[in-house]
Image 1 (cartoon, one colour):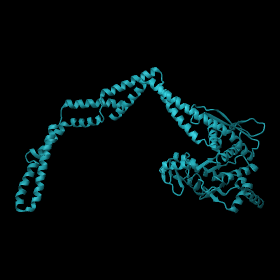
Image 2 (cartoon, one colour):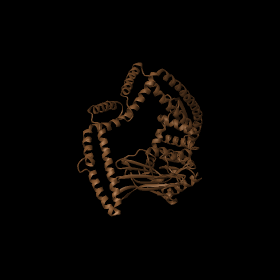
Image 3 (tube, helix red, strand yellow):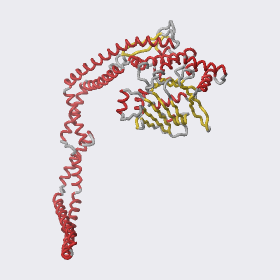
Image 4 (cartoon, one colour):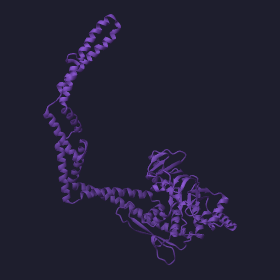
Length: 562
């Protein structure tokens, strides 16, 4: 097994659905979950999906609890893209471990953390692409959808970089198309827009606005509106300080004269005399400044009227174009730019047409190259998948990938749409998966595809939730061997009801529902050799376990190791 693989080491769940508190310690290889129907095996998979960014719901919180919590400890590989993703998040990773956590409150609020740093569910989902691949009934159903089929083909052929280039070109084309459409509107609309823009430009220009003018005018208006009060108060202050009988200046001067005579007797008072003299000078300076202030107070009614008129003019523009003068001026710049574009429409259209020709030519070249590569890869995938299906008791199955044109022009996925066709039985024509494949066949097809596409991909945890749906007997044994093979390079977590598959487990966990203090809870137990044989016996025969059934269980385990 590959020890350096990315893998889930620990999973902690509290107050989630039927789980009050559960800890699951996982190891490399094939980790298998078994138990009675409804015991909570799939709940564990759902909890892991929630940890990796799936949509949260308050119904997930255990009855009587305020919040549910799921935490996972992951060992990660040194993958350049993953390292860059973590660096962009500002995350420091120690000992190649990531700790993810998700909380859901009874009110439906959700919180997410990576290494104790707050994050979003969307970030967890993006990070999960490098850590875990969950394959349940929903994923198997998605296999019948065209985009999922194209994605699997590209995953098989390692078309990641070509897909990214096409997606980027598609986005650029979309932006350019919007610009062209805006300029290519009919002449009546264009003229109407020109009239509106010209009116807006002229109205703002006529105002001759200055940056921050509204702020300056508001200050000036406040002074003019309160000129009488300011003059009256300033006159009062001036009198109190210097001009009126018994002013502060007179009292300080008298005190200074008296202290001066005292200082002739006691020299220690000279310090106080100096301070008092400084105070007198300061009082006289303030009084002089106040007299000068009085001379400058502008109480002209006509000036106040001018300022109010100007503020009203600016307010009119603010209601139309922005909350501040700066906003209005920015709007003006945008109007001028749009006018220039419209008035020079022919030149601009020619420039955009040139860009369009160059950009779409690049897209078509890349898309055609990718399409050719896809068709070459499709032939290889068809052959390999048929071989895999032969080993999964679908010996005479034929598989074909049908190509057609993409429904959307300049799609980020390229010029191809694909459809997987299947003929499970001899003599039957190839038909779309959605119209012919049973649940068991879809399960086997999904496993076969994953066996192929994961062979050379980045190593991570693969989760299979009831991949054994609709199969049994010899096919189940083959499926178990396939899972065992995948587990040589990826950590596998598999939920199953079939003993033939369970016998291949490297690590076997038993999930059960028990009643404690009148409440139903889910428990999980790691099975050692004897307990594992008993569980396989239960899976083989149900409630009645005999020595013969136990011997059959031992034989299954022995065969799985051959």
